[in-house]
Image: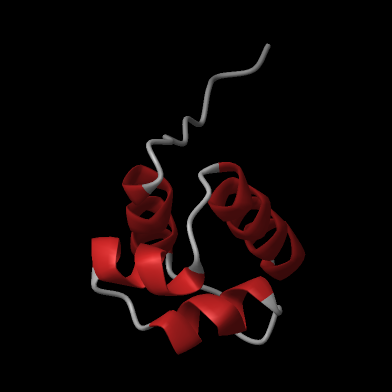
Length: 66
């Protein structure tokens, strides 16, 4: 999950044209923590990950598969 969370966060942040500082200001999550997630040094909780996605206008859905 570390790799996927870091990649999703990094590319989503870039796509939203946000710096780590700007994302930090939107979420209240320390910019160094955001950087550590993107560099695969820590794995965010689901709550933190969803908060970051939401701040970028994204959502996460776990759908039912056949």
